[in-house]
Image (cartoon, rainbow, N blue to C red; front, side):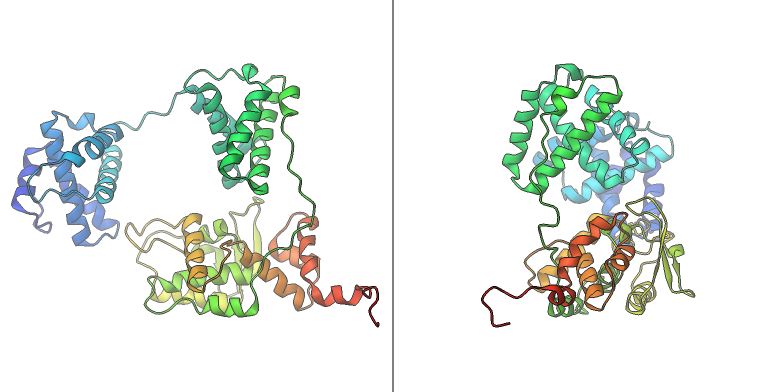
Length: 417
């Protein structure tokens, strides 16, 4: 046993007598390399000692350890666990400890990789995803949303059986849409369902299926072009948002830099998450966006406040890591970038701290467009900054340009002027 681990004698005995003995040192060293603290690494080792004791009692060999075995340990054993102290029983930490263990054992070839899903529904969704990616070139987030909706439809109609598309009837689609709208009866949800189903039916059409009758069931919800006003933050809300990162807030510099990226440059959450150190040219004062929604490279100027916020985060707060992403995890493992969901959550948390009612992160892009128009920029210039492929997408912001709209406004009937 590595003397730096310093485990309880009972825990050491469980490890010595269990099937995980040969892998404990490597497991501990792996956690340290992932920038876990020694205390956290000891806690995880104590967790797999508990797992090892259960495996011995259940007559499970190391070759039988997989996700299903871990689920049995967490769901069946843990609720009724009577193992003596210091048995570690925190379910979230045990799940994380077991996930690291499975990864290490697979990297070493001790246990096989998890079997790929072979259920008919999984195969159908996989082929549909390949079509969306390779034929239509859709972004990852769009594909994920389409797949989620289509999977629900196929699961409702076919369950675990074979996917026999010709047996899918218009009544099945109508019932599915009605069920989905009961959960969330908004125009945006209706549009998302319609787009996903239409894309799937078109894909089945390329497979040789007759889709004319079933495609006709999908009707787009009423959506008047340019009818709504994009929600943007007022100057007072912007000031309060930028002041919503007090010194006691964990990783405040990272969250502040993310807000500046969205507010000053109009970056989407996925673009903020995928920003790499090599994408920033500090000498030229530019940022190259590679993981964009339109799958093209865009070069944007780096505003001074944004660059200063990113530099402060890199110098004073970013953990030591070999990962080249700008924004990385605050807690171990540090060698992983954060995802778009984390960016979205951090910005929404800042909204809540200033009492902002609506929580759309996209409002920061709208705010940038509003500010550009107020300072005299044209709609075409706003489209270039926001990287819209179609100028029609940007035209909605013209309704925010109160300065120019007032110049063309007609007198109100009956008014003195």
